Image (cartoon, rainbow, N blue to C red; front, side):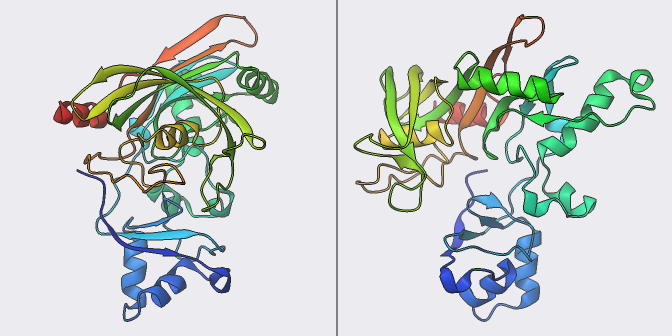
Length: 322
């Protein structure tokens, strides 16, 4: 299935701030009934800032981008999560696409039924850990507490690590900050990309409301991505992207500004000073996968390296391009 077609796109302005999502959609789409608007939201056809939203009562803020899709976004569930490494201090998991890493604080009051329709990894993983330990070891035990170390985008699949206590969390965060831990991604992009290192300073707003690079590199956060082509076709390249720093949306921004936006990326489609690059690839979702995670165990000092191959949806997409 290709990327869902956008049936409508709207941006909340200052007068719309504080309005509920359902109320705003009624204003933007006059003539539509309350029941139809609610049905769109509950059937996974509405996104806010490119993330699916099932909360009709969500209060919008100025600048929020709301999209109505012509088809429902697919579900992801606990059975798609894979545990790649686990011990008493940390757990490395393989996250499926279309699943948020952490539940947004505005959604934590949701009922369990509602949360199930839009799952979050940090809520599903504790139960999976109990099951992983087996019925005898898990009997009578409380659900384990997990501590976030980093996150990956909702539509990105692949590896990330959680700590199992606050001290390990601080130690792992320090490894990422000091560049001792390593992360490598696979990305499918249009065009041919040569091996290179991309360096820039990333800011929260490049001038159009999106994150991006500051041209003069006098402000922002230093960002470095090492890019290596693995396979090249007539029109697309399978890239290995190694993060030296880990800024929000770093790979997506760097590749888009290079003129090769990640296939299926609805947000970053080119540099600020140029036209948007159309996405005609037919990618089933954002073609970005966290394929390798390397870190040092904070207690034993053992080097841990976990790998995850290109998942089936992106592998099939790549094979179609071939």
